[in-house]
Amino acid sequence: MSNAVALGPIVSTICVLIGIIISIVLPVAVRTLRKTKLEGIDQPSYGQRIKAAWTKYGGNKYLMITLAATLVAIVLVFVLGLKFFTARDAILAGFAWESLINKLLGGSTGGTGS
Image (cartoon, rainbow, N blue to C red; front, side, top):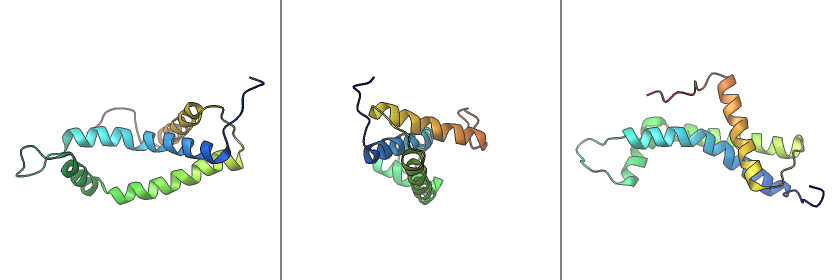
């Protein structure tokens, strides 16, 4: 690993942020898109499903969570000085970080829920 070059801090931050966002959004998106049904429409379009899910689950809340995730990514990379050698490592670090915090704070039990 002596010849390996670490990712730059901006790229690392973006990759960690991507991991955090995936960890937050993926379970909700999958569950939501499966269950969202629009009244009076037999086969809603993908856009209609997303709009209904945004309204039902408070999409603006997730925008605030994204801002907080950005701050966490910046802290992990710049303040703690974490170095990543591949984008995959940085994304996995962000995913793992958010998942750990979510579990510690009781935000998720790991089940599929309803």
